[in-house]
Image (tube, rainbow, N blue to C red; front, top):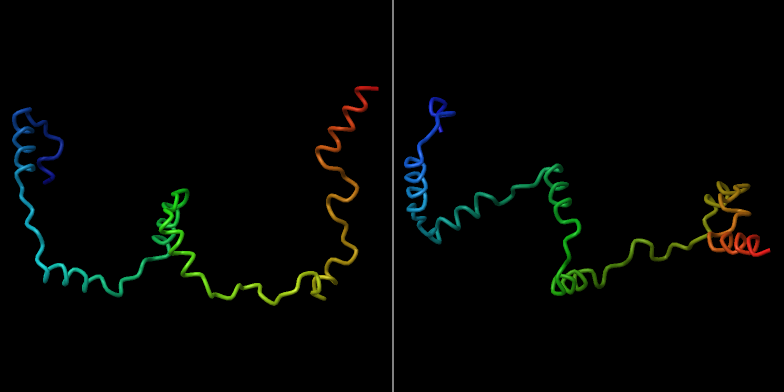
Length: 124
């Protein structure tokens, strides 16, 4: 829309005519050659990091179909896990770093134990 036409109030009749004109536009089907040219023009195009994040965010929370789950499962079969062969707790660097460290929950009891203690105190 041109700048001169912006903000002008259009009559009901004019709006109806515009709607009819839009409905009467016939889209021609694309030829096979045109489709091929469109595909070739987008080859090698890469998403930016920003667009990748947006795509990822849009996929969050959408359930996957059973077919998709099977495809993902098949594609991951045969891969070696990243932690295969790594032994836990035997790392000397970790042992040195944690020497003398007191766990945050040492001497504390769980929620249920505290709840039971309170019940006992109340019942006495």
